Amino acid sequence: MLFVTRRAVFSAAHRLYNPELTDEENEAIFDKCNSYNGHGHNYVLEVVVAGEVNPKTGYVIDLKKLKKIIRENVIKKVDHKHLNLDVDFLKGIIPSAENIAIGIWNQLIDKIDEGKLFSVKLYETENNYVEYRGDK
Ligand code: NI
Image (cartoon, rainbow, N blue to C red):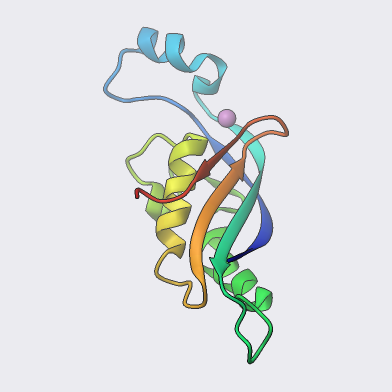
């Protein structure tokens, strides 16, 4: 089994708050991430595809193709957007790194037809990242 990774970056704004909680509860949980008009991050996304090497191509998945899948299904939808307001696949959820990673996974899972989507890793800052490997 081989693991092939494509990295992509995007910049986006978000605000962390739960509309079902009071202002005080939101403040206590999300602190400055709850600031009313949001704040931005330069996100780094790593998409890992696992599989066997195709003897015909020598590839698990053609990285040019993976780049295009990520661009069309994720980056175009999130780059320079407000994640609470502008992104169809994040509507109605708290756009934490965790939930964004799950949303990105769901965007990609049916699009990858060589190898198998193995993980979505999302860095929100240099030191904080989450990794999602599906619900199994
Ligand atoms: Ni944030």
